[in-house]
Length: 343
Image (cartoon, rainbow, N blue to C red):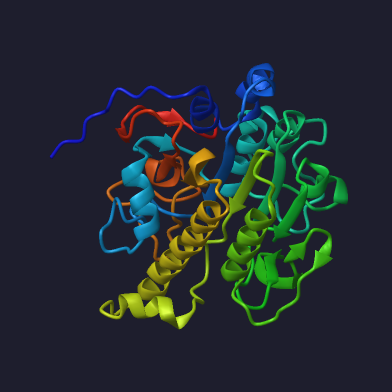
């Protein structure tokens, strides 16, 4: 059955954070938000999740939490990102096309002496000006050669997760390129400025636990901005065995583990939504879920039926799963209108 585009009517908050997702519109909304009761915002950014790596596009993959949220909310069926993660994250945080701010050149490596330009005021900084409490849980990947480029100096009240682009879920070691070869370069999992070393706990579980802790301690009278930059499915195939058991009928071990990582991500998001409900914040929360780019060729992710993969300009690299949920969305369903969510 052919999907049709509903006639959506979005509240001002939904328009701000779903269609813009950047500070350009946020700046224009400041005076309005100062005089009203702004929503809590939970922005969930998946890492290298392909078009066909989500339950509403591929029923083989078990994502019951996200599927339920999508059914109750809005699926954005033509949402476009940048082809790799750093440019996407730069656009999200600034509202600028990456080539306008020098962030269009692939990803920031661990030995690179640069980052998101310090002259720019970022989304969390603008949100703090209108009363938001801001937290980053997960991947940053916008510069870490100097503390000035790191999240606590760019508008976040707290930051928990990896500063770089590639992290071992188990050892918490970061990985980067040295002379063309991938090399582990040290612990890259931080609790604000402190280093979190390997304690045997899978990183996604740690991230979900911190997100739940932030919500449970948050005073609901103040608007919350939680940037949950989750480290899944990304690269590598390490995953707790209880999730691989969900796909025991799949013979290929790498495919089985990759799908298991997506189900683990879904479970983590379920913990966050349950915490919001328990804290009495759910009915005032706008939740947005999206991927930073498509799946890479070298993973078991799939962007079918789209052509290409992450790091290409084809739709397989730039057209990503996206949805929003919240009581401020006056209509639900599937939106077929193209959205350049990351400018």
